Length: 481
Image 1 (spheres, rainbow, N blue to C red):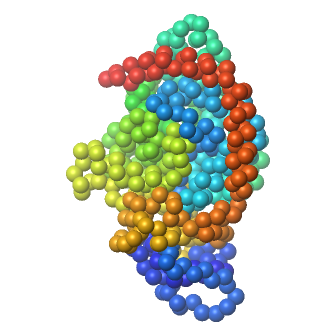
Image 2 (image 1 turned 90 degrees about the horizontal axis):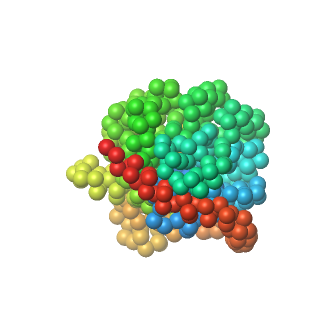
Image 3 (image 1 turned 120 degrees about the vertical axis):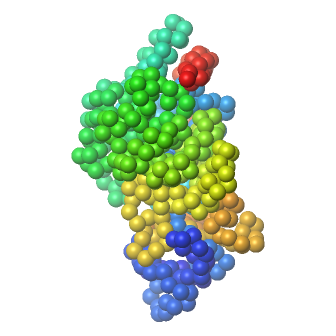
């Protein structure tokens, strides 16, 4: 049993109050007035000069990208996807574990205690690869929902006319690599599910983008998810081009097509949702879906600004995510929260319709937990999971302390995180990550990056040759009315 005493506690209404929190067997056993718990036989943690907040929940990221951070500047989504074979190929199982562990460690150190991870392998998910990611989350001590990313059409096949727009000499090479048939990928997912052993890291499915998957594949994913009670996360209307392609391929919006296929339900989570319209948001709300709003990645890739206010007004559950570190550069939920609030202010909305600090904070805690399908996570309340973060109030961004919730959202950058608890277990104490050997992690990462850069040199050279053609064609397609 652990008693965290003398801290300023962020309550479910996001007020700061002097309370003590009692933790027992991974759960918040009680939240009581300061100084009222007497007796021995417990670990007492002095929170003097500290604030206690719920752990943050990352609504969307990609474990495979953590070995490729810092490699992308001035790429939009489509040219970024074109380059992926040149940076993510030739991964060993240990590389997949290493990449996932880097991300889980960063989230832990920055106060994030759970994440929805669309982990990609090509040409299909493997038991060994997914298990490596699950193992990384478990080792770091972070909760996870791992959704193997699935498709049965490659990037060049999924966009109408793109392959034909490539020079003949490059077209054949671009079309050489193929995803496995959807029946094979579904069978692989069944093997992954049969081998699953973790309680703190859960499975889901990640059919990547609607038009990258045949309708038969999407239906099979839906059936498998219902059979096993799994969540499903998809990139939907992330870029303007995706929105245009949806109407070109289906004669309706991507959300309308998913609704027609009966994929939408309370376990379905849209990643991004930048180019949704009112009808899309209404359909998602009516079905009980969630949306992970990823403002940092949307800005870096030039995808646009998702309308979080319209999502909330429609009744959609909103989470906040970072996306993968190759397109957002970090897994800092404090930054993502801040951006979620800030970008709502440049859409022409009057101030009363801007996303407030408290709305952003709720999306990054309870909203994220709901998107991940984890009950009783994301607030400091009796009988809720003990995923907690101690913040050092001597950090300059809390001096003076006028409004804790606002200063967490608008001022915290992760440097104020002193200690992190997941399920009653400390994984960060006094700014030291207890679960991961960071110097060893760096040595392994440096070796892996050097080896993989050489192994992927040929694929990268091809992607760079394709880059101008992909960029020109997709930009033209995106500009269509």
